[in-house]
Length: 299
Ligand code: NAP
Image (cartoon, rainbow, N blue to C red; front, side, top):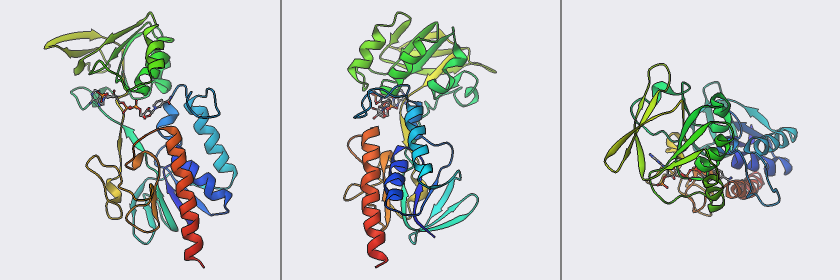
């Protein structure tokens, strides 16, 4: 029997674990793939209070090691089901806890266009910091207008011969400071108000077809980085939580779901600001409420 089972080892799940472990709670973290969540792909974080600059990988690894050293049980198993009485079934086992925390974040969104699936790993990537080095001295494109796309484009501009930044609008969601930095790079070209219509190639990426003002531009690139945000993965929890129209978990008191003792932290929940700082803040909030809930229910 665990006090708390945390589903997801991204910043919000690991922050929940940090606070719960420091309150002497027995914690199990279940993670389907790798620790770190989406932030592990950020090349440089410069808006985390108290840290001037750190890579997403270093940030996630520090937090993961901090939690491991405090004695968390961490298992890399995909969760298949949770029940109202706090039972969690994975592909390997079933675990019982007093509290469940859903911290499953988001997974990279796909363009959902012809040619995308068959060329993943053969020219198409969703992580520039993981795969950028394979494209040293080559011509690549990156699609998206958020912080991930802009930071990835800056990162790739130092490795690749040429970087095309393709975005469907003229305005960006990314920080203006990052956009200015990207604009100053001589090997970067912006292709705005444009959408990728088709991806060509059989065994490897050959070109992409871009639709701009009813015109089709055929761009020869060896790599395409897709950085168009993420999608929630909350469908397996609908027996214990309510989802909004976009798939985010509905809450009251910020992090409480409709089921007593089941909480949600980070990007999986409906909220107004999806940032690293708000993800870890959710972890602290959840842990505090979870600890109070456990202490009350065991009195
Ligand atoms: P995001 O902010 O949601 O941006 C996604 C971008 O992709 C938007 O520009 C969007 O266009 C575009 N897009 C979405 N669907 C598309 C489609 N089907 N086709 C073409 N374009 C599409 O995602 P993100 O950049 O991954 O960032 C996620 C969160 O992490 C954000 O809160 C971000 O600030 C944060 N983050 C922070 C840092 C940092 O602090 N250093 C680094 C990375 C990410 P529209 O604008 O037209 O909707």
